[in-house]
Length: 75
Image 1 (cartoon, helix red, strand yellow):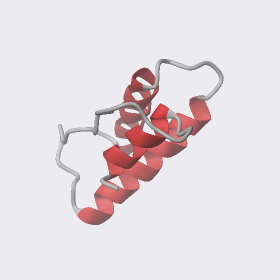
Image 2 (image 1 turned 45 degrees about the vertical axis):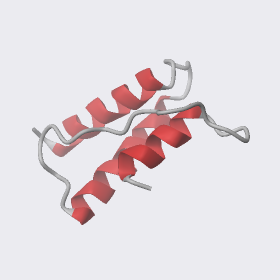
Image 3 (image 1 turned 90 degrees about the horizontal axis):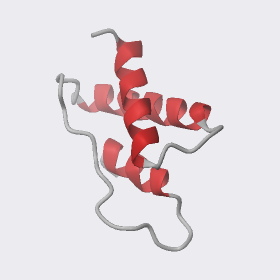
Image 4 (image 1 turned 90 degrees about the vertical axis):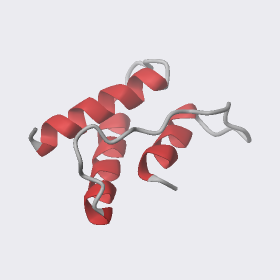
């Protein structure tokens, strides 16, 4: 699968997990690109590698997609 297709699929999954908010496609695209680049740098490039899921509600005003991104890139 091409790199851009991987980014697109990850961005879509992050967007769905965040509740499909309107008008924020760029935010999820860049988050997915960042996560993809981090995975490449750490060697986690195998197809089907799991994407982090939101385990609990975020606290202190954090948006759900911020927690999802942190889980996706392993922070």
